[in-house]
Image (cartoon, rainbow, N blue to C red; front, side, top):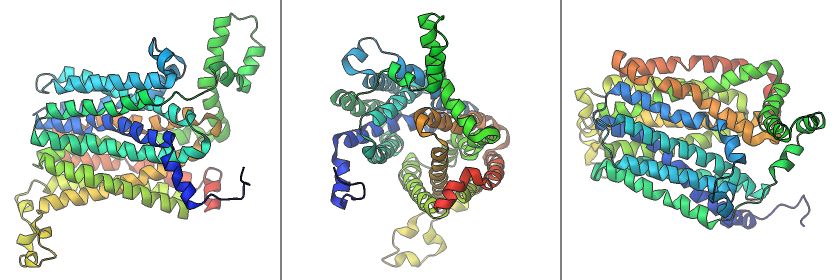
Length: 483
């Protein structure tokens, strides 16, 4: 074994990405990313192009709430065996496969429908996809942590994100391109077939080894204390209470013990930090459709280009956190997220104006005759407005997400990583997605511009709390010292 001071060569470090457990996460990441947009922005685009009322579309964002409450059934997935499947595949792979089959079945069901007149059925199949997707996410996270040594976890997480983004591109741009050239039904049928990538991966890869439930529970001091004092209880009661203490109570007790009176304020901050951009998300794509953007434009600008801007924002956020620490970047992220909603308000106000159909060539005629500028100035002002809107929105969201994930990671105890991080990430999206469901009603009553201004104002409490918490030396002292 190499001494601890010896660093591996760059070549050895790069080889980690060719190990089987790491490559596996590329395909599982794709399988995890694919369903998300198909029950969110891609679905709302389909509904709007099909003439569905804007108020009804807003309520469809509540389908995404299943992702925000997945921690409720995570303990079931962690402990319950599936008949037949678990015996043949093991606990993690059986639950991943079950989730994937639900996703494929829901997408196939959607491919047989037309939204007009079938909204209830569309909602049921969308819920089926979201539940299967959230279930798959829980199982994949556990599979990733248990299937390789700690020194591979960073590489596995990185390659998982690459696969996840690939799934988002396929479900976003890919589905819109297919719908534009053929039909929405074919688009969703194709997406159902793409889930086969995850299914094949699950069937080919081995089940990770893991400690039994009994061993894991006995490692908890509170569980051991309860077991020592409960000999007079029945066996089933002791097992149930011990499981509850270890799986549910201990992670919460740890968090509130470490942060004391600030714990509740931190949880409130987590719940409202992303509220501004999550609350407006359900109405962004209906806005594009109502402004007359083609599905091809929406796919190219909001999905492909937008994804690149999100990645760029995330990279910038990571660099800035390393340089300045988490605290000041939390303020910057919250502020930028709130302000970019005003850009959407501007787009909603001027995007439908006749003058926006002019090309840049018409404004600056003569420049397009230059060889290097030819083609660039054929872009309409309307398209340029969408590009600028997506640039600002996705850069700010990418930065805010990267910073906030770093913040949540700093809050998470290593003893309860999965449970606490699942709780934080679920709480982060719950309130915003709930409010997003009312977006259609606000747009129907007051218009898009007022809606996006209201969404921007919702971000003010997060900015104020970020400023207040950033002054807490105990909360950010370690990060600030290290930077």
